[in-house]
Length: 286
Image (cartoon, rainbow, N blue to C red; front, side):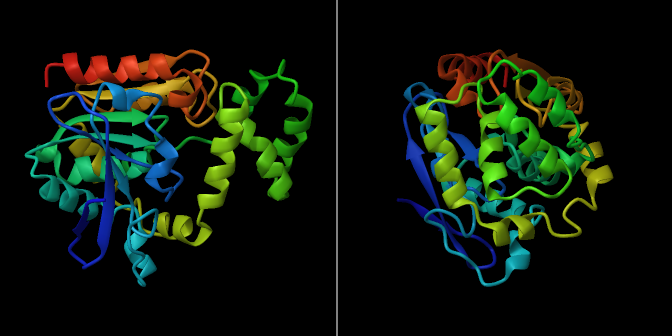
């Protein structure tokens, strides 16, 4: 397991999987603050593209610093730059999922000359001043009206919106993160629940994390790199129209909606997901 040191002395780990492509795709997990194990092999993407899966500070095999302030999303952009240097790459192909969209965008805004391409998978964009209202998730819930679990999930959703949900409610709401609720998605959701670190997640989103949104948005508007934004047709955060807004931040942004997918599209349609990413990396004129 390779490791590297970041400027504050914390030792971070990453994992290499697969082969293919002219350089690895660096994958940053969401959560926030999930270990890279949440990606698996990204729906078989590793069979066609070498992956570098980063364990963020305090997750997976990476060391946990005592200073929680260092977990704040904008500060972790320096960890990605340290990884680039450790890999010996002039520029990075970067993938961010969910909450790590904020981190990948923070890096791209700070180091635009070090970005070769971006893949944003159901990704947040608060770094650039775009948020996804909780109310939009109700639209996604209504798309699942024919699911056998709908009548159980709907009241759990309302309790979550009102701030009255308990652990059992959030377990029910896991179903909304997957295009189909089967053995694999149930196991993935259970693992993510086990990995989730509430303290680290709160520190990631600490006050001040997005204070530079206007400057970041302006920098991203000048980014000379192809950007692929993937959203799930069934996802509530973001809904596809919100993901299209994120793609519109970039001069070379494109948006793809994956049919039948929710918040983890590599699980809902692995072949479609892998093909979309490989074709983008191979053919987008980087």
